[in-house]
Every structure is written in C-alpha cells, then in structure tokens.
Image 1 (spheres, rainbow, N blue to C red):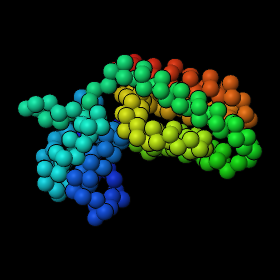
Image 2: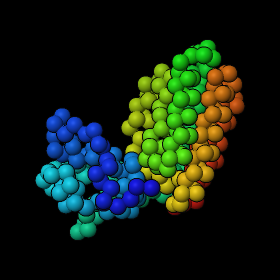
Image 3: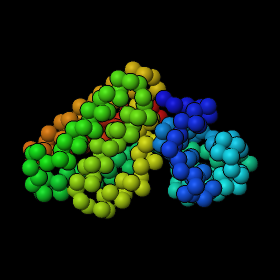
Length: 236
C-alpha cells in the first residue's frame, strides 16, 4: 500500500492548480490522498507538511481540513491537530447495509431496462474487470482500487437513477477508506482479496447480462455484506 509522507508527490499528478482556490486545492489533494491510502484512519494529517509540499499557506490547508471535518472524514482534536476519523465495526455494518440496498435497486433497474446482451455497457464492465485483473499482477494497489470502483460506477450509471449515483459519488472517500482496510496489510492478503473481488464482479456481470435478478442480488449481498464488510471488521 502507499504509505508515508514521502509518497505525497504520487497524489494527483495531473492536478490543475490554476482552476482551484488554495483551500480547494488542498481539499482535493488531501481527499485524494485519503482515497489512495496515504493517510489511514486514526492517522494525523500534518497541516504544516501539506502546506510545505503544496507551496501554499497553512491557513488554506486548515480551511480544507475543516471542510473534511464537516464531511465527517476528519476530526480535529484540541491541542493535537487533525486526524483521519476512525472507522468502527458499527460504521461498516450500517454503511454496507445502505450500499446493499442501493446496489440491489440499481440491479433491478438495469434488468428492468432489458438491455441486449451485447450492449456496450456490458463490454465496458467486462473491460473494467479485465483492467483490474491486469493491475493486480502489477502490484499497483491504488490503480486497482480505482479500477475496482469503476465497475460499481458503471453499475450505478447504467441504472439511470441519479439519486443512487449521487449518493455513491459523495460517499467515494468513505468507500475508499473502507476498501483500503478490507484489502489487508500484506501483499498476499491484497492479492487474495482483489482476485475474489474481480471474480465476484464477473459473476455479477453475467447474472445481470442474462437478466437473472435473483442471482445478481444474492451475489451483491455476498460481495458486500459477506466479504467486503467481514474483511473490514476483521482488520479493525
């Protein structure tokens, strides 16, 4: 996994600073760093180090961190600074319940659309799975996390339900924090969890493509509640 402040330069390589205010720049930078696993739950974000790295004033960084506090991702501890909020087993259980309901709804709405088996969206989902499988072999953990999320994004978009898409988009940082935990601490744990996830996606795609709604919903429950949630709680 990417860890440590020395990896800060790996975040947002295509960042267009001129399009954002300094506080917005810091917010997006820290947000992406959390998503990529540079900072983990319970870990302090040193505003001075971020300020120096980005070449902006600490006030802007603190403004960004305050916004992340409002997002319930970061907490400010008096006299100690800003820390990534710890995730509890109760957080995981409740959040995954919501995701299961929404993804089951997305599945129902996709199948209701009665798309042909050769619809381009199914090819896009298959490509996302294959890309994730290739990335697993390269050991690029952040790259895998992004490719893995793409599959679910396609699922939400294809449902054509904007409320599902809005919720998941706004929850990406929390999903990423949980996913980083779920992949374990060692390379072997990561590879095992990643391979299981891509196989789950293959099975889910086939069930949706063929219109097998009951099997698709059972697969998403297994994927999220039985494996994803269990992996996270096991690592907490």
